[in-house]
Length: 228
Image (cartoon, rainbow, N blue to C red):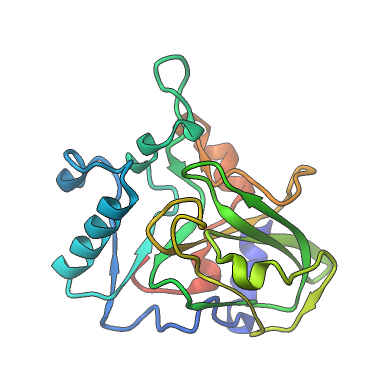
């Protein structure tokens, strides 16, 4: 099982971002219905959404926000990309971890990797520029996804390119090129891509939690933040 493998190798992972995710300026952000400040927020306006993120951080005297794994979020109502809701169950269960930080922060390979695939998923509210890396531990192949990137470095990447542990290969993107979100990195782990290239669901239907949790283990096994 991938989770057990990742637990055995936690000492081998490098940082995904050159940030101290265990420092005093980090806070967990709540984007579920339990946060009353989301009820009146206009999440379709990305600038207003950005001000909301800043306010959430200020409330906790923090500069970096983290969290979201298996969180049932209300913020995806901002985009029809995640389902209409009136006809079918919308997708609102977050399968990765978000790190809310300034645009331009470098993104690093936490292990030796090969660039599996690239795509600019440019629907409103989607990933924007996306990188999927392929890794191998003890003969087991698995994947990591990085969404909401800048196009600057992303344009220079090539499928099949090898990356050393700790090598910077991308940076956190600004809006609107990052899928039209306040700047943050979406980081996700996948045991199997199911034939997908350059894209993978980062949000699922809550009724399918068990299936997706098994396929996408907790990214904090790599990030190792005490706030997540």
